[in-house]
Image 1 (cartoon, rainbow, N blue to C red):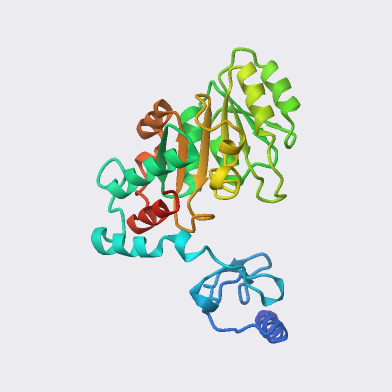
Image 2 (cartoon, rainbow, N blue to C red):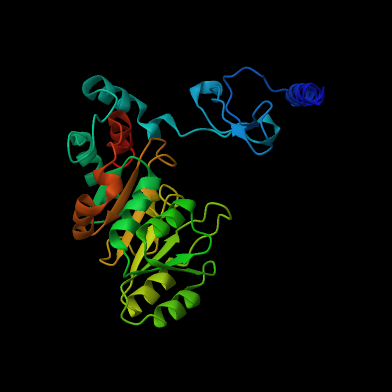
Length: 308
C-alpha cells in the first residue's frame, strides 16, 4: 500500500513540525494563544508559507512590534495618535468612508487634514490616500507614462518599484544614492520628460538620500523629483516636518513628496504633497485616488492634532 504509506509519512512529518513549533514556543517563553502577532510557518504548509497573528497589547495599552528576546517596541505616544480625536470622529462620522473620494468618500476631515499636512510640511497642497503605497502608485502612474523616463534608486521601496512598473514608462535603475549616476542617465536622454524617484530614508539600510544633490541634478536637466518621505516625516526637519523641509526643498515647484500616516503619526493612510497644479492633476488622473475607497474617517481625523 505505497499510497497509504506516503500519507502516513506526510502526517508524521506534519506532527513532527507541530511538535518542533511547540518546543520552540516553550523554549522562547512565548504564548501559543492566537492573540499574538508573529510571522510563523503555517502548520503542515510548505516551507516559506507564513501566517500572521495579532499582537497582544503591551503594558500601558500600547501596541508595538516584537523584538528579539521578547521585548516590544513602544507604539506611538497617545498624544501623537490623537486617539481621542479619532474616537470623536468615529461617533460623529462613522467608521468607513462609504465610497471613493470623488463620490461620497471626502469629508471635512479629509480636507482639513490635507490643508494641515501641506502647511506643516511647507508645501502648497496635499492629497490624502488610503495608504502610503497607494500614494506612491498614484504619483508615478499619473506623472509618468509611456513617453516618460523614470530614474529610480536601486534601493527604493517596493511601492516605488511597483509604481515604476505600472507607469509603463522607461525605467532606469541607477546605483544607490549616486547623483552622478542620475546625471549621466538624464544626459543620455536629452529633452525627455523625466522623473527622478528616491526614498528620503531607505527602509532597509536606514541611510539618507543626498536630496540637495539630486535636486540640483534634476533642475539642471529639467526633471522632476519625487521623494518618498515615509521614514523621514516626523523625524527629520524642523519639528519633524520631513527630510525635504530639512533640505530646504519643501514647496519647490519641481518637487513632490509622498508620506505615510501610519508611522510617526500612528494612524492610517498616506498623502502626496506638492504644487497645487500637481495635486489637481492627481485628483483627475490617479487611479488609486479615483477608484479606491477613501481613507477611513477616524484615522483621517487623528493626525490633525500632531500637525497643529
